[in-house]
Image 1 (spheres, helix red, strand yellow):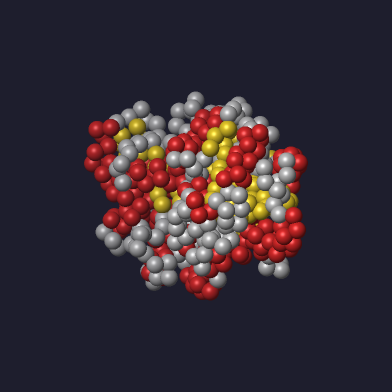
Image 2 (cartoon, rainbow, N blue to C red):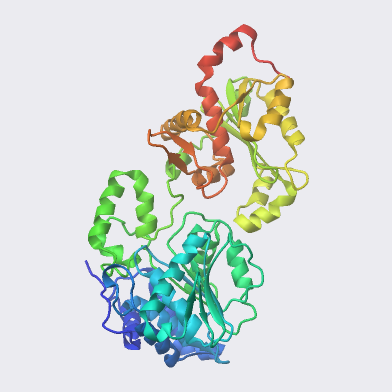
Length: 559
């Protein structure tokens, strides 16, 4: 196993050598790392044509700034902060490039790398450099995250660095969750989306921590907008790979890949991704360095070997190993549905044969502004039929925010719209009546009493057999296990419905100490309404024996 050790000093020669060695294949590196290095070399040749030049003094300055810093935790606690070779190369490029007006070229930096490779500690040093090294008057620096506790991680490490440095502690005043330089009237604070006010920010520098954890783009947009009045602001995003293909993190990931491969030319955007290449096996230790350029500094080879053994023995741990330690994007943190096995159940349904076929329904009635799902499950044939509704006025917003093709789904007949910007419950009830008339074998309609009690009462008054299905362990765990059995055994037939397929990929479950499961809407990466409705239908299917005598004694009331 090749390893990359830290150098003895923070020196531009180290940065230059790393770039040259990567391009000469002397260092094991992934495609995106190589393209990052090649972009730098290309720009040295052609950058002048676009008003760019490389300032070696500026590149050296950021490296030498880290000589003032000390590690505060782990095996290097108390030692001078010597950047790893890849870190020196990255900072050398990021801070060395200038525009013709003398300002920094790069305004956004995206760094995606496996855990335990020093990204947060390096980010703390960068924040201090933006606070002190730029000598910007009235600079506002923030470490930003979805939660304030997460935002404090980078900020807290910077505080410890200041305390350990005589040069910095003489210039920076430390307060509770704030560091302040009175000479420049500049500050560095933690910032989060749950902060009481995000108005009035004038950001010179922002460290956006664990971007993959941002479920919406709101905080990112606030930060990006708040840099508009600064001469050379910098947003420095650090993250491991994520799970949602519709997230702000994936948006930045995809954008960077296009910049690096030349599909897009954006001279203000810098970034690097350390990950496995397509075709690499996660079991091959010789490629681990592609995602872990600090392998053994301090990421431990032995620790990764132990985690690999666990991942191979416990499929539920594989996604975590791939995402956190190989920096590979996965579908969900604890994905319940195997996508290949789900796709294998794409047999086409024959509606005419299902008109009289016994079936059970599940209704997941969402909030007034989002998706509602109705699913019918036919036990004897395995068929699954779905109906989805969304307020018509909300489609553009959902597509823009979540990058989900609702318009295409509406055109394809997979999603229906209700007038206005809220779900029209009368419209839903009318569609349920029509579905019941078309599929006369509908025996029960399960619903979540938390959201749909009122509509259920109204349907019951009309003679429909509606049954509450509570979203707890006792009810949902048997249904989830039955669903797993059916789709893995290819007993399910969902017709390759794209909306349900999307929701299946989103589904994350949580487990209690007794081994029971329930869908986890909070941790699922996006909407799972259809899968919840399917589980409710399966739950009623599994209880069919308990209600068989009712059908035999009076039959099913239909309208």
